[in-house]
Amino acid sequence: MPVPDVFSPAKLGPITLRNRTIKAATFENRTPDALVSDDLIEYHRLPAAGGVGMTTVAYCAVSPGGRTSNDGLWMRPEAVAGLRRLTDAVHAEGALVSAQIGHAGPVADARSNKARALAPVRFFNPIGMRFAKKATRDDIDEVTAQHADAARYALDAGFDAVEIHLGHNYLASSFLSPLINRRSDEFGGSLANRAKVARGIVQAVHTAVGGQIAVTAKLNMSDGVRGGISLDESLTTAKWLQDDGGLDALELTAGSSLVNPMYLFRGHAPVKEFAGVFPPPLSWGMRMTGNRFLRQYPYTDAYLLQEARLFRAELSLPLILLGGITNRATMDLAMAEGFEFVAMARALLAEPDLINRIAAEPATLSECIHCNQCMPTIYERTHCVVTGAPDSIH
Ligand SMILES: Cc1cc2nc3c(=O)[nH]c(=O)nc-3n(C[C@H](O)[C@H](O)[C@H](O)COP(=O)(O)O)c2cc1C
Image (cartoon, rainbow, N blue to C red; front, side):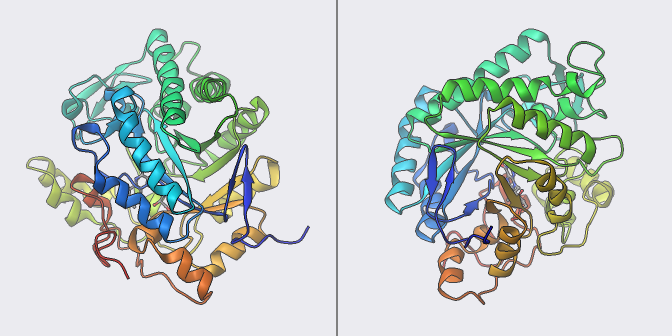
């Protein structure tokens, strides 16, 4: 089979992207009152105008308690009109748009949300200084139904796809993790039990949208934590998800927002900058233990490729390669390795017009230096501190 050109159109389930590039989720924090703002619309219009095939709105929680903090949007009838303005603006630029839906689980800040957080077990969140409640069977059923509702709101609002968050030790991912999920009931123990929440959510969303829009999921290949989700178990989960038939593609990620965030990002660990955004005593804790929490990993281009190759070899499901894709060479490599799409987060945060510039000049290099100082800006208003984008662009 000839290697496809990353700039050629491609089908993703029922939709067709104008090219094979996707702007990955970068929590925007531009949702005052948990509703869409003009600022949020511009944040997504820019990469759309900049040539991306599809942009991803993040993070669209399925309930107030499923947010990482009360700055976040949650899917509900009042949110639909604003989301419709956003999807119209993206479509006017020729791109498609996906909504990342999910429940933050143990990562949710219950104090800020003023709503209980849920986890597989009673779990202490040091940022919110609150315990997440151990989810009952009824809670799990409710969250599953909320994912289906969120997908229906996304459909009503004109989204082309939903991306279900099954990674980063958010709720579904924390159920998959043997480290966090110490339950002894039907949702704990064996992988088949731990995978029930993720599989149930995907099936509910698949049924809710009935093939009208694409359904993808972002799944951890590994947590990067001893005792957490391993490659082997994740590969088995991915095969089950493929066989269940509820997904049009899988985006492969890694790491844990709870215990090992830098495994997801690689590059400089912004300990000082994180400490700066928290009030005492959290800032002191971050200064003292930050090097352990934000354990640093060297950055290389396409840093998740080695793990992702194992998934590519075993799965027929379309796969989206993520992690350190910033230039034409890494895009071409992803295509040559058999991935259907590439997802890019920091590089498009730094330069929303990067795709058009790479298309025009393949030697274009990204200005992202993976300093990761964009990470703490999620607590104020997400942006790149190097280029000033998306407020200042080429
Ligand atoms: C500022 C920022 C916010 C992010 N927010 C989210 C998010 O809400 N949901 C998610 O799944 N990933 C989130 N990510 C992770 C990215 O989607 C992506 O997995 C990661 O940055 C690696 O891709 P990259 O090398 O292209 O940046 C975020 C990343 C950054 C830099």
